[in-house]
Image 1 (cartoon, rainbow, N blue to C red):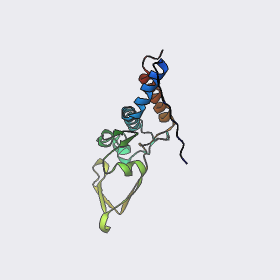
Image 2 (image 1 turned 180 degrees about the vertical axis):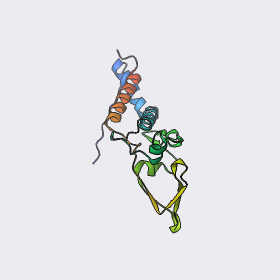
Image 3 (image 1 turned 135 degrees about the vertical axis):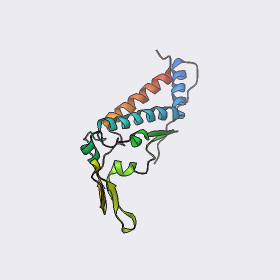
Image 4 (image 1 turned 90 degrees about the horizontal axis):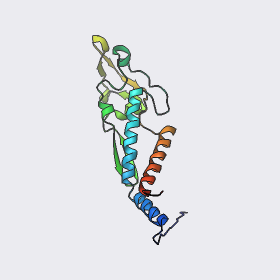
Length: 168
C-alpha cells in the first residue's frame, strides 16, 4: 500500500515562498544528482590513491606492484581515469565503461576461450607464461560506505539550504 502526502502553499508569507522554492528544487533533482555524482567520482578516485576498498580494507597488492613498485590498479591509470558519473532526474550512476572494470572490482576467475591458454608477460623481463586460468582478487572501488552516506546527506542539506536562499 502506498502512502502519499500533499502540501499546498498559498500566500505571500516568507515560509511559503521558501518552502515552494525548496519543493520546486527537489522536483528537478538532476542538479542534486550532479552534485552527488561529482562526490562519488571523487570518493572512488580516492580509493585508487589510497588502495583501499569500500569497506576500508587494503587492496591485495598486484603482482606488478609487488615486483615493479607503484600502485595496484594504476599502472596506466586508465581504470582510475575512466571513473565518471551520469546524473539523471532522481538517480545518478557512476563507474567505468572499461571491459575489465567489473572483474577488477568484484574479483573472479578468467579462463581462456575455446579451451586454449591465457598468455601474459612476466614482470622483470622473465618472458611469458601460459596458464589455464587466472584468479583476480576483488579490489572494490565502487560502492557507498557510511562516510559516503554522511557526506551525501550533508550535500543534500546544503542543496536544500541553497534552495531556501535568504531564509534568515
